[in-house]
Structures are given as C-alpha cells and as structure tokens.
Amino acid sequence: MKKIDILVIRSFIGPFILTTCVVVFIFLMRFLMLYFNDFVGKDLGYDVFAKLFIYFSLITVPIALPLSVLLASLMCFGNLGEYSELTAIKSAGIPISRVLLPAMIFAFGVSLFSLWFNNTVNPWANLKGYSLLYDVKTTKVTLNVKEGIFYKEIPGYSIKVLKKFSDGKTLKGVTIYNHSSNNGNINVTLADSGKMYTMYDNTYLVFELFNGTNYVDYRGNDGNYNETQFVKNAFKQNKMVFSLESFGMRRTDEAQFKYHEYMKNISQLNAQSDSIDKNIDMSLKSQINTATQLYSFQFKKYPKDTSKFAREKKPIVAGKWANEKVAPFNTASKMGESFETAISQAKNIRDQFVTTVDIIKSKKRDRIKADVEKWHKFTMAFACFVMFLIGSSLGSIIKKGGFGMPVLLSITFFILMYVLMQLGDKYAKEDIWPVLLGVWMPDVVLLGFGTYFLSKATNDARLFESDIYDVYFDRLKTFWKNRKYFKPKTPINA
Image (cartoon, rainbow, N blue to C red; front, side):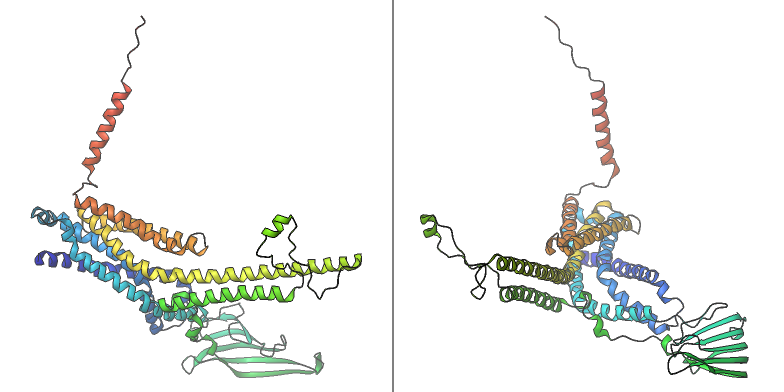
C-alpha cells in the first residue's frame, strides 16, 4: 500500500503545483488587464510593478487554490484511469476510497494551509497591494506636452506649444500662462522658439525660451487693474524652471486602509462585530433616554394588576397626558396650544427615530460585511476539500487525463461556485438571508455533488460513457414506437 500511496501522491502533487501556478498567472493577467489604463504613461519603475505582481499574486491564492485542487485531482485520477492503473488497483481488491485516501489527506492539508493563509497572509497582502494600487492610480501621467493643446498638469501654469519637433525637445511658438497667484491671465510669456528638457534626475523641467516677451499686469490695492503698472519685458534668451515633484508617486499612509474588512484577520473582524453591536445598543438606549427626558407629553405605565378594573368595569386610566408641571386645561385656547405642542414634539421624535433607524441599518450592514468576510476565510478553505471530492470522483469515472475534459469540468464547477458565492454574498449583505446561509451555500451545494460523484465512483458507475445512454435512448424509442402503433380493441356490441 505504501507504493500505491506514493504513486497517488506523486501523480497528484505535480499537476497541483503546475495548475496552481497557471491559475495564479491567469488571475494576475486579469488584474493587469483590469487596471491597464492606470499603468499606461506613468514612469513607475520595475520595482513598483514587481511589488504589485507579488502582492496581487498572493491575493489571488485563496480563490486559485480550490480551482487548482479540482483541476489537479481531475488530471491525477483521470490519468490513472486512462492508463488502466486505477483498474489494476481495483482488480487487486483495493476499494476506491482507499486509493483516494493519501490525496485526500493532502487536500485536507491544503485546506488547513488555505485557512492559515486567508487569516494571516491575505490581509497583509490586501493592505500592501491595494494601498500601492491606490498610489499608482493617483499618480499623474508623465510629462507629455502636445501641439496646439494647453498643458495644465504643472500646478499653477498653463503651457501651449504650436509645434514640437521630432527630437522631443525643440519647440516653436511657446505660450506660458502663470496662474500661481490665482488672479487670472495677468502674467503671460510668449516666445518664438525654445527647448524643453529635464534635469537632476527628472526632478525639474526647464523651458529655455528664445526671442520672447513677458507681459505682467499688476492689480491695485482695491483689486482693480491699474494701467500704469503694466510691465513688458523682452528677452532674447530666458529660462523657466518648473518642479516635477507632483509627478512622482507618493505613498499614502497604510493606516488609512486598515478600516476595510479585507485588511483584517478573524480576531480583528470579531472585535469589529462586537464593537458594532455595542454601538447599536448604545444608539437605542440613547434614543430612549432622549425621548423620555425631552418630551413632556407621554403615557404613564399601566398598572400591573388590571383584574380589579375588569371586575368593576371601570376604564383603565394610565395617567394624564401631561406631567404635573403642565397647567390644567382651563380654556380652549390653552387646549389648542397643548395639542400643537404635542403634535410638534411627536414630529420631532418621529424624525429622530427615523434618523436613528437609518444609522442602525448602516451599522448593521457594516457588521454583516465583517461577518461575511470572516466566514469566507473558512468557506474558501473548505472549498479546497470539496473540490477534491468532486475532482477525484469525476477523474476516476471519466478516465480522461490531460487538459481537455478536466479543464472543461473544472471551469464548469468553478463558475458554479463563483455564481453561488456572489449570489449568497449579495443576499447576505442585503440582510435577506442569514449570513451563515449565504456564505456556506456554495460549499454545501458542491459538497452534495462531491458526495454523489464519490458514491458513483465507489460503485464503478459508468456515468459518462455514451453507450449507457444509447441503451436508454433505444428503450425510449422502442417504447414510443410501440405506443404509436398500439390500437386499443373496439368493444363488441351485444
């Protein structure tokens, strides 16, 4: 049996490592295509791309492991069945459940690793990856001055070039508006030609202008233009230097992203849920206290024993509408004023209750999101084991290895899992379903498939062989043909 276990493990580990790398690469390419426009035209450097690829490769591992386990198990046991090795093992009297045992233990280990990874590595990778991605998305595009278009990416300046020569430096017809004082177009520089280049490792941009004029129109103390303070400076050569500090990528403090559920482990998510529950209780208690303290018109408590009133057939008097401080209703005008005050206070307390209910609903949604993310760390780990049951059972039934049929079946069940997961998360976050039902529904449904296929594999069912279905189809055709030509006997009249 040790040789068989070694054979199964070797047949499983190779495809598992290969498919894991392939699946992670596919998800990484999906990420690259999704944010491709945010990377174009920005001088980010190879180190930034390397960090992004590493972080998002780690982020894709939890979703990639179930698919790789499914595909690896299909390939492993499909190859064993295709080359009659599985048939030889069964003919020796070894049940299929014993053949699956070593790979099942390995898959269980993968599930435990996935749980540890989801709780430890994945929150860290989410924090690093998405914070870096945010900085990349907010980074400006590298300097690109185009012909005939005002370039406004340099803070406080608007630059227009009539013609830009092929060397990328020589310019013709340069117009520069200085808006650093926020007083409109009062500082304008016009030049016949010039050169554009950077210095000090792309830290500063230099415009070297030739044969131009600078126009400055100063304002008076009252904010109006003064014609006597108009200045005109002609030059043959002039240099204007601009800082390019705003074009560099600035790192945001990672603490600003730690509020999100993706950045937290199980203990932090539990603490968040408990904190939200306490905030909800405090909001309810504060609302009740505010209502009882601020409003004078209220019902007093009913007496506990109402049997005496029932026997005497007297109405139960709960108390006055107003407390003792309110004057009795002596006149109709005072009664009207009291009713208006009561109506106003009732509207105020209704508005406060509506606001409190909205706040509580928002807090409850945050708590549900935290619970969903917490349980996903368990469901994604358990999905690895469920996918192994499906893949190993189907592989031993279809007896086809390689990347043909296994890839098709893997994509089918992965899409089913993904659709059920999105559906369950949506209904759970909208508080239509309980959180446990929403997050565990995909695993429960797939576990049903895995149990069914395992029972068929144990009984050597020919589930995917066409001749079985040909027999059923022939029987159906024979039945339909006999039913078509069947003629009931006509009764004989006596």
